[in-house]
Image (cartoon, rainbow, N blue to C red):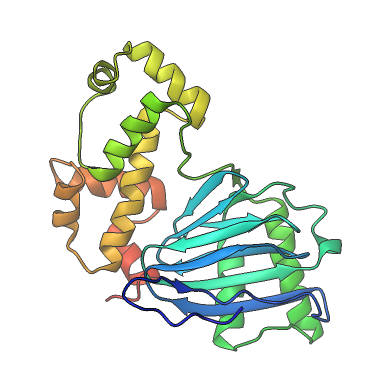
Length: 270
């Protein structure tokens, strides 16, 4: 599908990769996409891993929304219809895997934690602009990626969506103002529930606690702000932290690295 020419009122559309006639079991894709771009709903007979080396990515499939920071990627199994929405610019990496090699990989769309080995192979192939591994050494590396995916930590969705109107309204309010630090009890009062009822609803619909969901939201917003070059102190205060050190501690729990280390490694900013 060709890229559409954008106007002031129309979004830009991503090119859909055609791998149906591709020889060999792998195809690696590398692109840089601008903000406010879309991929229309589509599917492939191959499975594929979608990874944002810089920035965050949102994909939709089967009524679910997948948001992934650079420690995670989105796995789409063969023949699953999916679409993509990019709020910010990303550096995109993808590996398409022939159906015969997908049997050991997740049968449903999900987010997977990217190991340093997968990240290194993708970076190496991108640096060499290698799309179809052909040498025995490169084919072995591609198979290592599949082996790593087979044992990767899987999450159904990094930032799950709610279904019930009350919880939807709470989460939408937080997305509009992620620095809002009202307690679960305060939010429960707002939607005319008890704190215990709202907590149970979070676990039932989201699979995680209210506090964990809010922390993940703040982490994703922090990544966007780091990409934009904002200071750690400004980000901390915007996200509702009273001190920069409290924000840094949260970020390190989620990313395994400090915001400044993350900025250097993933954002290419010294």
